[in-house]
Image (cartoon, rainbow, N blue to C red; front, side):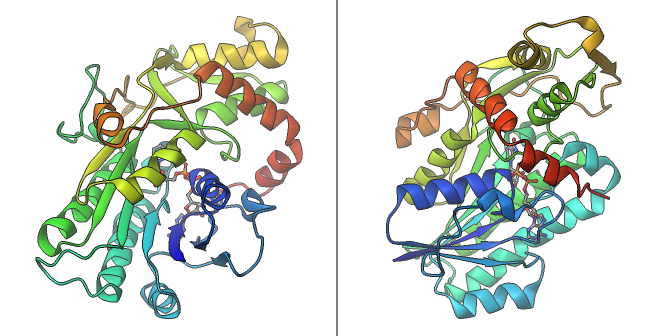
Length: 337
Ligand code: NAD
């Protein structure tokens, strides 16, 4: 039986990943370490908390050296997948230090403890263990041409800077110690259980509550949207089949303007789009106009392809929020400070 340490598993992608793994693989043990910030929600895993033989939760901070060591001492961990992060660009503008602490220091702390537990020695590659860092296409900065994994990193906001900095440490642990790592850089995810501070759940929630939809600038920002389960499948593949030390982009290679997404949500819920339903708000100074990444590598080397068409995936997501109003009301009762 393989043991997976999943950090940030009570958040959006992490909880979907745990569901995906328990559904897809038999005979695995999942340890979820999550500090339960405003974005972490045990309800995201309702129904998954099957029993202590295949799942265990620790409410710990990934920066807490002693607590993370305790987990490694107690369990024989084969894989670490590091989702834990401060993940909201807007908040990174005002709480930059929290982003540095969790996204950079927390990542290094996890690697240091795993390196010791796995008895990694320089120039001695160990098979059967892997550290997977979940990163983002935002590290490339705004680009109109498709970035391959070799493109230079050019982050523009404190969130993407912290993710890029963490990546440099992850890569350097491979280069310097043969500590077996991978990095995935995915585009924007959407799907069930996403905290309503990111574009799609915010727009759905506002529409449900008959409030105006706040659109940054003219809404012409281009994003590549990937359905969260397609990302989980890619992460699973990279973890088990990825070449150690390698980075993999994950996206659909289809882009939509934010305004297009907003109009689709209005049409699904209200049956119409009227300009008085929209409120244009000033865009962030560090906002990137377009993210664009190539997925040639993961498609050709690992045989991955996205399976969910954006139109269907978005309809399913909207319907999920309409069907789970109680979940939405509950998370919003405990807003971030
Ligand atoms: P999220 O904000 O929904 O979840 C983050 C989780 O991490 C929460 O459960 C939170 O409680 C936990 N956490 C935060 N600080 C912690 C700490 N110090 N110790 C332990 N747990 C902590 O984020 P998400 O959208 O699920 O993103 C997950 C990862 O994927 C992040 O690393 C993010 O950078 C990356 N990513 C996200 C997207 C996206 O579209 N959401 C796209 C690309 C990459």
